Image (cartoon, rainbow, N blue to C red; front, side, top):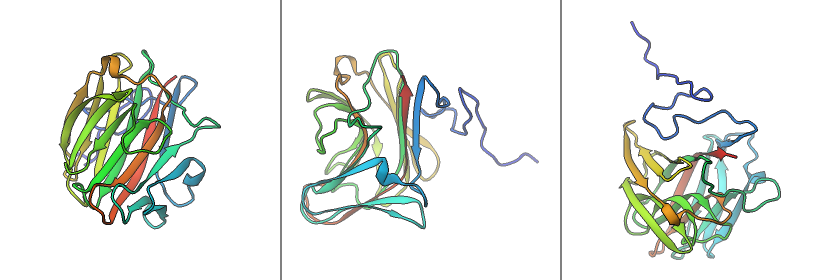
Length: 240
């Protein structure tokens, strides 16, 4: 009787990602590859690596739920209030830049108590805490839509592709991959385990040319109220 296990793959390193996942070929960290994974479990000092910034006046800064390894962010009160969690590597605030020939990955597991009255950005974004950055490559759930998009922005001009519609209070694994040439591919995995989306952006001249931070922005939309956003893990990296 065969064992009921996922197939383990051996790209540059070892992983058990599905073979049609954009994260299936993550390499091992090394001199030419930077890779970071934060699971927000007990004993992980996330505060020394992720800088928290309040957007607006009514947000509650994130707190780890120690029993479950989840970072919870609450956007409470006024419209567009929220938080930004941004990785600060070494002494550099802006630590990442898209370069031809250099691949990049970003992934996370998310859960939103609401999706229509929520703004969510996950990816590589400039240092300023804002829900509408001028530059960046990121996954976005915009206010009043519930749609998950993959976005590439350069000096305020963007190209975006919708990859699916999110449900409230539901766990999703979301991810995107820059091939280092001309394409950004994105997808999400829902609670049934099926991979959906497959949105692709051909960025061309819209690929940002400025320094970026791996970041998570969670904000209330245009309607005041309380929104809870749970972050189970964050993964990012790239060639260097």
